[in-house]
Image: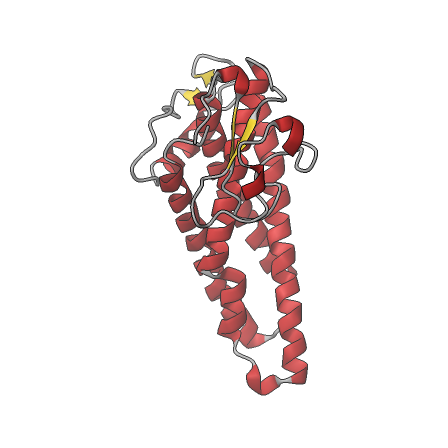
Amino acid sequence: MELVDRKAIETAYAREIGRVFAAQRRLFEDRFAESPEIPEETWEDDRKEITEVMLLFGLTIALLSFIQHGGSPLTSDDPAFDSAAADSLAKTLAKVRPRPQGFNPLDTGPPAALRGGITERATEIAGDIVAHSRDLLRDFQGRIESEPESVNVRDISHRIYGPHRAAVIATTETTRGQHFGSETAVAGTVGISQDDLWFTVRDRRVCPVCEPLHGRPRSYWGRFYAIGPPDPHAVCRCYIQYANLGEGVQP
C-alpha cells in the first residue's frame, strides 16, 4: 500500500534537500568566482551533507513503511536500540507537517536490515548525485572555452543545486524508502508473493512506462523491474499491494 502521509513527507524531504543545496550553491558560486576548477574537498563536503539528509529521511520513510506493512521495529528496551539515532529520527520527523502518526522514534527504531540497507543506498545515491554534478560542471567548463560571453555561473549553480533537482531526488527517494520498508516487512512476516500487484497513483502525471504495469502481478512486472519502484525511472511514485497482507485491489 502507499505510504500514509506520503505527500507531507516528500515535501519535507524536498525542503531539506533544498536547504542543503542552497548553502552548497552559495559556496559553489563563491569558489567559481575564484576559479572554475572546484576543489575536491568541496565535492566531498557536498557528498557528506547530502548523505546525511538522505540517510535520516530514508530511515524515517522506510521505518514508517515497515511498520505500516506489519514489521516489528526495535523498541527502546532492545540492546540494539540506538538512542542517538532515535533522537536524529525524531528531529527529522519533526520537520514533516502534519506529523505522521506511524511511530514515536524516541522509543521505536529501525531493525538492522532496514538500517543497513538504507545506509548503503544513501551513500551510493549521494555519490551518484555528486558525480552528476561534476559532469554538469564539466559541460559548463566546455562552454567557458568555446563561448565565454554566454557563461553565467548562476545558470550552472541552479542546474546543480536548484529546487527542481531537489524535488526529483525527494520524490524518487521517498518511493525507494517506501518500497524498501514494505518489502522488508512483508518478506519477514507473511512473505512476498508472485501475486503482489504494482500500482501507480493514477493521476495525470503517471508516465507511459509505469501505466501499463498498473494492476499487474509480480510474476509479470518482476521480469522487467525485479527491484520494484522506483526502478523504472526517476520521480517514480508507484507502490505495491501485497497479496499476503490481504490488501484489496483498488480501481
